[in-house]
Image (cartoon, rainbow, N blue to C red):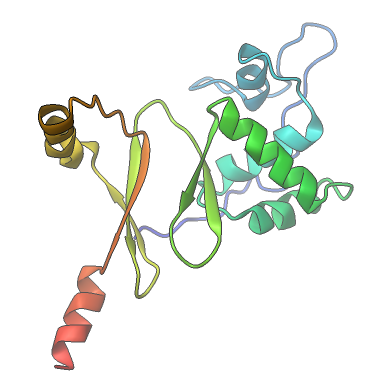
Length: 173
């Protein structure tokens, strides 16, 4: 699993709308800003929603609600865990965030990208490995052939045992 480096932007507050032109104060040239995404989806822009989106963006996702709360509350002390959960529920409903159980007893949240995103989750050590979408081609074909079901997986976790844990387990036999 690749290590996630903390961003040097972590202490910067999220972009807020400029009162003059309605544009984001910080413009992302590669993709929409959180403000633009919310507006495009017809969702009211609030500081809480921006902080939750920014936490997921700057920390590369796979965060629990509690981790999001810890990150965001340093920047917005009025935020509480109930608000984080309500915000996450809304962001899931509009398709900006995905919720996944990657093991460990707490749901993880991450931003939904333009392409499907899947994981292999080790039940022993908790490692999460990004999985190529092409690996699901046979599953989609089989679902269509056998069940007439047109599968469109967007965010999937498959549980099992990673190579390191498997080899360690075999070495002790």
